[in-house]
Length: 468
Image 1: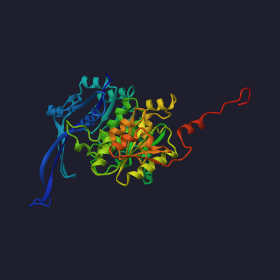
Image 2: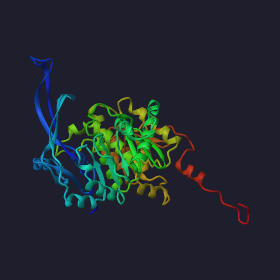
Image 3: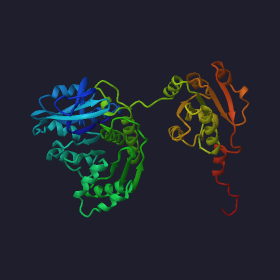
Image 4: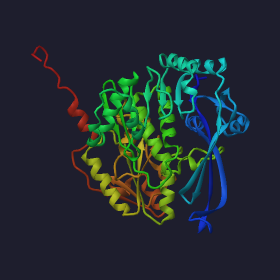
């Protein structure tokens, strides 16, 4: 079994009270919330641990401090191994009063005394395969023994630190620190000589400068400054990279930072490069917000945004609204202008409200069709490139030599072939027409193909006895 991802930090209790407002209080200009439901979940490091456990097969262990209400909080952390320092008092609780999606008021209550850090806590950190510090400024990460254990961990395994303005600074050698933009601005007040004039330069110049100043100040490997809907700017020893975020309409940003940090930590634990971990974290945070954020998370529910929309989901949604489903297929090994023309034409056939699904030959299928040296571009990368195109709504990979099996599952209204195909002679034509669909060919760029591109890249042979 893999060594666990250990989450170290302050556990909170989050409560959402949902209701409706249709009148004001008679003795004050305040809305009256008619409470309809109450939802409780772990917050702080507890939420981070829960999110990590639901997005990774790696064991997740939470190292935290718990008080007199420890058992009720443990019950909310299903699937997470909890190692707790004992403290007096009760878990800090944040209660939000919501009317629809609007927060009317937040009430904070409870609090813990000083925690007694045991050898079990320190042993849990020492046995980590990766560490994520989820600091909520309640004191655990300032404990000298805990900091010593975290410093030792940073020297041997990936360590991600999600900081808090009231918390302790990251330990030297941390792999990645993930402040948001406002936090990063606050932290640079500790950095001698930092020029605040860079703030006027905007995004991404300011977060890149903040990241570099904090990276040097803290002595850490890299800093990823998150900027909400704009994505994240990663500043490491070799330079700066920017990962834009897909726009999330509506949604609840509560917990987005925890989702970002948890995804980055899981990716690094599994061996991902820093920039790949940040890209995955930006995408996961955007999906999380769009799906309702932490407010949509119950203890027994799957994580919001954890299950991405499948091609079958895309087709089903189109059917429900009476829209046209168009599909096309191929290897799409090296994307070229011929592919672009086919995809654009197919998308136009779908109309304004329809969808285009690309049926993509798997790596094994391409090898059987094209030879042992193909594909040049691996399946996962071909999927990613196609999904990035505005014309494409979904990509479905199939392993057979022809697309009949996947077409039977998707049942498109139109099946598009790019080129000079005799559509009546295609093996899939009777199948598609069997459910009332049609098979059509669209114009293409003659002479454009992956095979021709590859042939041009092959070096010309050197004549025997000649000069290279």
